[in-house]
Length: 565
Image 1 (cartoon, helix red, strand yellow):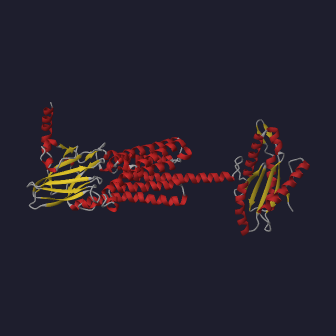
Image 2 (cartoon, one colour):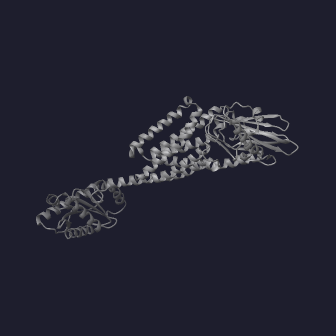
Image 3 (cartoon, helix red, strand yellow):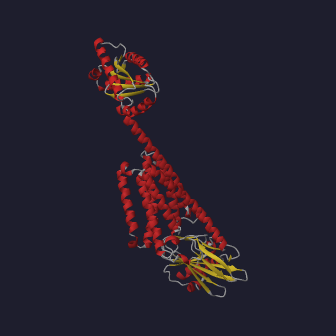
């Protein structure tokens, strides 16, 4: 039975392998997977001579431009044929797109059978590259005629294999284009980082600093897995570059979770979710620091798997916060969705769960740019909300909750403004101090609800009678103060008379009753030789007391305001 299947496999695959396209070296060829056959070497023990002597049926046509592999301990041999139709040898750059391939061995069998062996990859010093760029590459010489090329790839990470055979000029052009796109991404992220750092220096909000850390960790992670850190810090230490990649991913996940926890204010709003997020954060830190114990292969597997899980968890936290009414969570939700999709697409592409495409391979970069823009909007919205809350709190601290007028603190805050104006010009400011007569009897007879309604009623009538520049205060209990800038004593006295008449003619509608009431009013005018601002209020209080005594004697709602002499 086994022999039958072997024969059937040979019948099906042998013609396909032999029918693979022959690459003409007169042109450059990129992503040549459709001209490649692949052999898996589970033990990683086969040598080039053994592979070259294997029958064609041992190789399977790749059938797509790029190969993708999930976590594996196997080595993979990629075989393809090239032809140099010129009389002299030609030089070409053989290179692979993905930077973190540990071992890349290239073996070229010339037409005369001689073998040329070349090495590159992240498992070797950076100098093993023919041209000093992040992409693994070798310079290969091809003799005239037909040559067989073997490319052996082995790495503990999930990986893609996009083989390219091009001229040096074409190779450098491809690296330049990739560098420009990377520069745009880095420039956008760096600009947002600096912008948010400046915002933090102005606001001192913790979530602002957490976002700066999040963007910085993304730049570090991106630089690590794109091999930019290799020539800068680890040119002679390939193992250090490997650990840099997985470690930077863990750092990015931790920074993202810290920002999520801080921005959504889980500590104040959702204590239980805060504890869960904190536990997950501690787990990430523990796993990140346990790399030497876990081994690099397991460490990088965990980092890639957790990247999608943490992104999904942050998205769910944003969704729940938005559902519970957190307005700022809307931008966070959109940004997290963008970052989540980008992270998952890149992770799935690297792990061979979706077909390779440049867009999906770089999705995390594009997603994080959109994420950064939306998160910046979210932060601006959060700052705006915080400003509105501070203004609201400040206004509430200066405003009487029952009547909506300024309270005594509001009066004290505004005194300085009036003092500055009076120092620059003539003394044109009057104060009216108003007290409701027999207010205690209203509370005792009809209840405190009626008393509160009367205070609101009086405040509303005062507001209707004042000019836009005038200011009304509830100083406490049933006592009100009016400040009238730009009015002299005669005008203020006339206003007091009109107010007394208006209030007496507008009883309080209470349940089925109309409760009459009256007020006593004291008027005083600012004098340039005042000992202080409080003197104006003391004289108005004294005048109001005289008016209240007159009311008590006459026991009626009439009479002009008493004016101090």
